[in-house]
Length: 417
Image 1 (cartoon, one colour):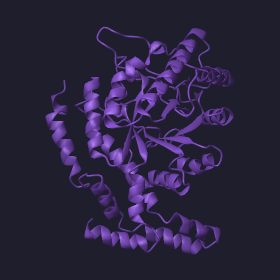
Image 2 (image 1 turned 90 degrees about the vertical axis):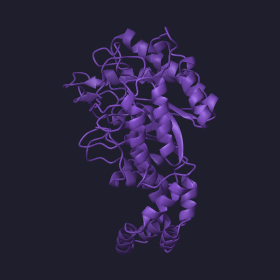
Image 3 (image 1 turned 180 degrees about the horizontal axis):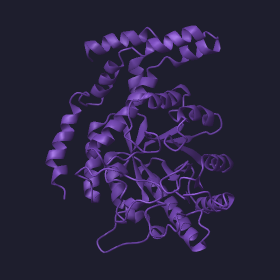
């Protein structure tokens, strides 16, 4: 423990904050690391372009092209990140034996056996996402909300398969699996029927969730989106639709992605609203720039506010947190690492905030003092608390970790075809 940390600790103590306790608490809070940052959301079951309103920009060298490469890259990221990690997979990352292939409606747990082995060897859990995009059977931009029954049925069967796989993940790792349902269904221009696709989507999710599963092990979520490329005018899974579905179906969690709302909306304000009603919620944490662009997460204002709300609502055990962004314009290992560390910083900063004192000032209508205290907290020596957290995790400080990225790029990434 450094002298600088001791001095910083004393400054925080003057505000009633125990930084040792904050560090100890954060070390055990799991955050899901998304596999798709490593290969630009390509997966291993198709070679076509991304569809479903999403797009990855950039062509930085070193992209993972095989399961082995992706796993090696994830290992490198884990070695550079403090705290407790989970792994977040999409169904398109199924790993087939040589000469084997099944379509998404026929996926089985065995197609993810190598991911389970990977997770168990590292003592981490797995979260999961059906992949309702980038597939020939996305018909006219629609999947679960399609008016074509054969198309809709294919994707329902895919969702059911993913329920079974999620149960397998949870049973094998001993960690509950968050299974998130998101579709990119929608229309580029003004639709003639807004209700029909949503009724079909509702029916489809209900059919998927009719597949038997243990609610203690599998945590199904529904995620909204306001628009995407090619679906600018309408999405079947709007915020109102998904939130109401979760509220009216037992055991279904609402999942909020902070890039999936109008630019003037903030998820930090939505977190405490949903926690008033839902025992558990889920987050996909990203950084939208003017739209849902999935930029690398930074330690910026909204990121800090989201973390504050999770912490000040005493909801660290009620909120499932996962990263969700993909940037192919920069080193992908660095993108992963910066984003994971940024969310860890935000959580630690929130844990080092005297929330009860600030709440008391608000409840007593001491708004002048509340403003003063909030401003004073901004200049406390948080960097030393973060440095101590890294030291306790056995990691280098922020000035040197990037050297490992450069070395990995020179020795591994640069050699990939």
